[in-house]
Length: 522
Image (tube, rainbow, N blue to C red; front, side, top):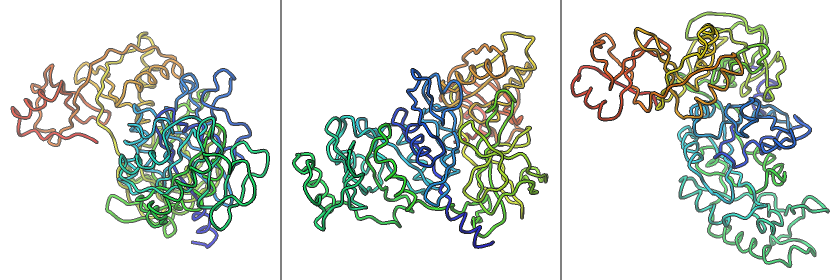
């Protein structure tokens, strides 16, 4: 591999933004794109009145509700680095999509609302990052609003999430009295809404050099007291601990006011890891710099361009270099083919790409060849470790309101199921369609997209909460084992699955049929 290619790979930074809904995830993404020159005007999520929508929210339902329900991919250049941001759904009903996205990144940025602190969804997503050992950078947002005391938030980080923290900067005041941030790392103060210089230097004692109005306030004095406390009793900064995901650098700012964001971006790029090796199913480590092209599909999205009814498979390049027209092998089927129609993204804006390297995300035009978790390689054939798939908890029976639209109905379901947000089942003889999902909102999005993208109105009849269990020894299963409390269905791969009414029904079935070995997904 040439030095130039190694250098290109080392300059990649690929991260996901994780947070609870409304913490400011999409707004921060917009501001980062603004600094990268990818957009000229940042729309905010709450831009419904102005008609401006966030660049990273491309689906119609996202614009209507002001939430992200898909993982958008955005790329920009900044300060010699090529940055790939994966903006994940914040809503808990889409946690499966988010989990898979976290498998495709090398680090994560966690956003915390200063008023709310650490919320339930943040804890869930943090645990996935922790499990993978990926570095986590924390941005405490909305400092221009009243919220919790900074020291209380730092304590919460350590106690609730069980990770050490190091404040890279520190707020001076809060809410209406927010005066700026004391930058511990760069040894300067960045004033909020200042007409003068962007930064003010500190003297050798860590105090503002020269006369300034800020020094006469109690907020400045309080910030200095807090920093003295952090210097004496706080954690030491350790890049090694950051890389292992054991210590999170903490930044304060306001994404909406675009304050503290550029300082965060510059420091993040300095410490975030380049593309990391990935494990195969045979526990071999694939090094980005030592191997020819390889990648895995972590997401499939239908109808990103509704006019073309297209479908895109999102590939995280793990090693080597992609070149348009290159021959690759799909590990699952052993088939070889040329990669010709490939794209890169800024939400729904796409451009054809002829080259990309490890760390980048590219989109492959998909006519039904790919599945989530597929591995593609240009060298020896292998399979990367499996991506997580959740066991659904909610189920609905789905039919088309207009029986004349059966063809569109089945095509729509098939395409949307391949995206992985909903799971498909059918009853054994009548082949009635049952969909399973982790959360109710997924069904609402499914219904909306069937109508808007496939022109099919659907009727959804709740089947209720069920416990889905797959079967190791299918040959021992008899249809007579199926009942109203233990419905036997097939999944999209024709595997048999029992849908149990509740835990009691599951235990009763196992006691009665001990020879049947059941298992669940995640």
